[in-house]
Amino acid sequence: MSRPMKSVITAGISGIIIVVGIYLLTIGVRNIRPRDLPKKDISDVLNLQNGDIIFQTSKSDQSKAIQLATHSKYSHMGIVYETNGAYFVYEAVQPVKLTKLNDWIKRGENSHYVVKRLKNSKELLTNENIKKMKAVGEKFKGKDYDTYFEWSDDKIYCSELVWKIYKEALGIEIGELQELKTFDLTSKAVEAKMRERYGDKIPMDEKVVSPGNMFDSEKLTTIR
Image (cartoon, rainbow, N blue to C red; front, side):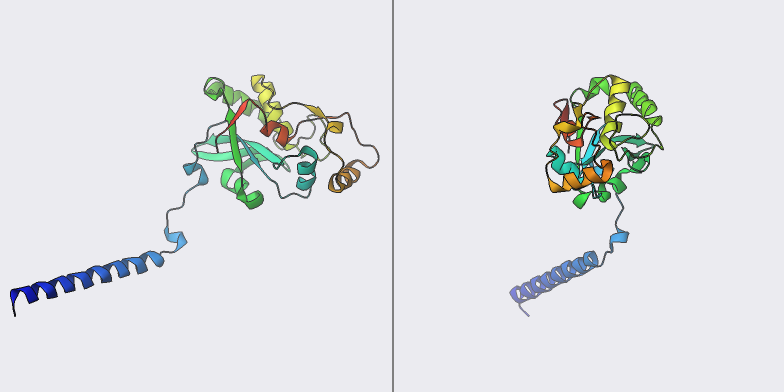
């Protein structure tokens, strides 16, 4: 056999080996099951800090009414805390508690969320101040969710919890307190929810702070 012919055959065999190798590698990748891959917590890919504020659209039966009344997409929120390398959200649900970050995100509509942070967080969210925030939050732990949105400490709703922690621990007001009558109460969904909660005695002068109002605060910057 001539030398040129040997070269052609050798090149052909090499090409076949390469193609077969690529094919086998592809089959192997396809056959990797999800449980074979290393599991990653969502916090591993986020640039989170203690004290960050996280927002989502809740799937609760009152979420739509809150969105309509506040003209905001977001109806639930909490504070992000890190403990022993894991991230949690301190939130007012039933009851006030710490929830694993992954679980909190999955609970929202389409797992969508937004993380915001104080613009001057490097100066304000020190280790000492985070301890103060946690200490203030501890007095609300285990308290029932406030379905009447009253401005007392007996029961707590989500934005009230975050607002009071920042106010009492750091003296910072995130978002403006409003009276219930300043919200848009005209839609049928809102009217129905108001009748369900209050009957004919709607506390129009009650102080309220909404997730939407806090979301729009100029004191915060969006992280994710």
